[in-house]
Amino acid sequence: MGDRYQSYAELASGQIEGISYQRLWRTSAFSSLLHLAIHGGGIEAGTTELADAAAGEVHDFYTLDGFKETGTNSDLHITSTRYDEPQALAMAKAASHIVSWHGAAGTTAITYLGGLDFNLRDQIGEALAGAGFVVSVASEEINGSDRANIANRGTRGMGVQLELTTAQRAAFFTGGDMSRANRKNRTPAFTQYLAAVTTGIKNALITPGRG
Image 1: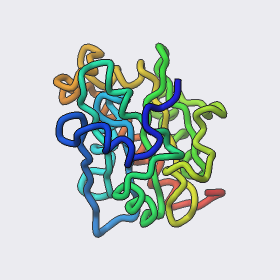
Image 2: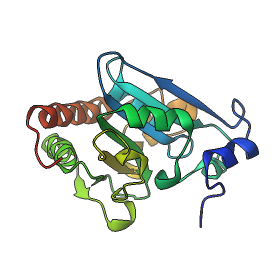
Image 3: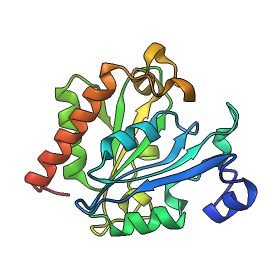
Image 4: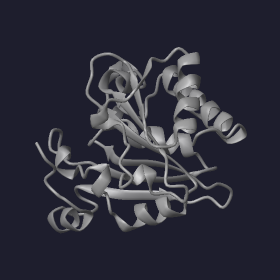
């Protein structure tokens, strides 16, 4: 089933910002790394929280945070290759490195690694695996290899797309409850996961490779 909206302009004309969704962002004077969650809030639950925490006060952060009634947030999904919200695009185009956070279906806790920044992708994957998380290179359907994907719209024309299964994201919140109210209640796995991603990013920036 395709997206209800094919562009941000269409979404903005059909949904009310502040009632159905909000856009949130921060910019940093110290970093050109951007953490994105364009399907945040209730669209792909947990991705806003992950991107926000990964960015902290050091890196840039952007999310489209959906908060419609349960089961209808999927209406707010615009696929990554067509995600043209102006603020997000401007931030992506100014970034040298991009990590785009997404949710995938799945009852097994796993992260699918994609994007065109192969060095950054692999360093994040190795750090996650070293911390005990299961990772795999993403299949073609979700591998973020299209140059139009917002993850690849930075100054270097490449970025990373992380697709975390439902089971993996649920493990980050107490009781496996990913409701909006409970997403502030985080398990140790949340912190451990982000620490591994941060390590992977640092390793990639220290030792540039194919990316």
